[in-house]
Image: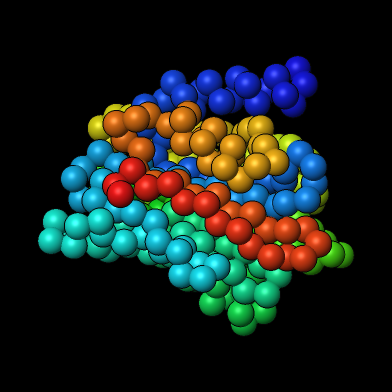
Length: 241
């Protein structure tokens, strides 16, 4: 099958999964002018659903939609998007800050995540998923990672890293936290998979937002990085508005 055909199959899998959890896509627009990060959050509990994305310059943070209803902020309030020089970070938790701090010290994405594990939310042990774009002209590339349990054993952490040496115009790789809904919720399995991307930031936002389960989706963001100017553009969709 062509990449286009593979992407169509993969889109259907997201659409038919009522709870893929939090998800990351990293790739490039078809015209090759923009590097792209997509990040979405979903939730089943009232506490998880009580969130929005808010931009702080080129950074994005999660915040409570209704502060009076916030129960436990420990795993749901964080920066999913940060950047430093040529490095653009996206993640589903406070490991964004770990990666950011390591990169500022000249250390690597992998070194940062080797200090972290899956989330301590027994019995689910939600995977930590992360992505990194390096926009330096000599080595424009991207990476994805997932930190998860082995067969839902909270004593065992498996750290997987996926490094991509070049971008594919019109496509990206997607990874998300859960294989499907359940109790406990089973972790994502396999490698990051191919999805189709579009030139328009609005079209990308609408496309992925519409793939997600209406009841469980909460917020989605799309970040564009201009290949030539390195300027950043953000698009945010919040279900709570």
